Image 1 (spheres, rainbow, N blue to C red):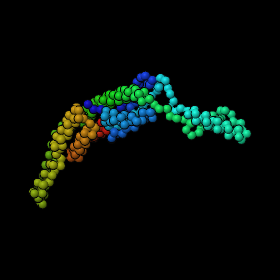
Image 2 (cartoon, rainbow, N blue to C red; image 1 turned 90 degrees about the horizontal axis):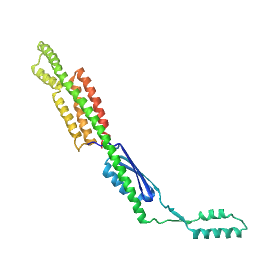
Image 3 (tube, rainbow, N blue to C red; image 1 turned 180 degrees about the horizontal axis):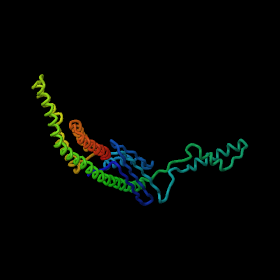
Image 4 (cartoon, helix red, strand yellow; image 1 turned 90 degrees about the vertical axis):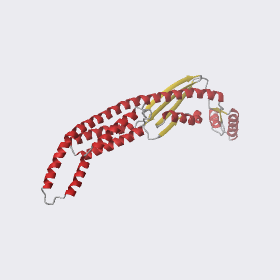
Length: 295
């Protein structure tokens, strides 16, 4: 089953003291390109997140976003070093008094808090961090699962379009085969008239004539191209309905289809067939465009 490179999934998981929200968005890209937006607290988990995204999403431009809200008791990441700040404040007051200056208490506190090492980092509890990451992991897994389901849904839509496009090309090929049957007598009559003209010429060269005749027949015969094109169309549908279907393989087959369509158009020398060839090319361009969105 086909999977599109376009997808979206989000999930919110609530747990003790934490609510985690994850969004995963994917777009077209030739390779896997991952951009992660993760809070600093969980920055050490980015590699784990990237591995999960790589494992499940395979290809495309992936944008990952994690947001969390604490719902339990919250402690600041930085705390004031009260002993040191108190020492700074006392020193500031003494300095001001020695200079016969009066400094308001609020200004003293402000100056003290701006001094080096006035704040210290609060050490996180490893157990609490591990429990929070379990909640985040659940949100990540659910968002990736929803994104993958979205891609499969889009892939099913693409599969329907491919069936439609290939069906149209197959129908135009059948019309070309019908027109080719009517084209042959016209070609034969044109060749007969030219042969009669050559036979009436005094400088008629039989060997040269045979060479030109063989070249003429090969130039206008599209039998092999019709057979190859039909085989390519059948093969495209066979690959489309297998687990091996991917954008690169379908695009390669589409190129082979285009090669045969172009050859038919250049060799047929028939206005009706040329119109059908143009219609086939139009459908083929749609196929190539859509294969760029398939994983």
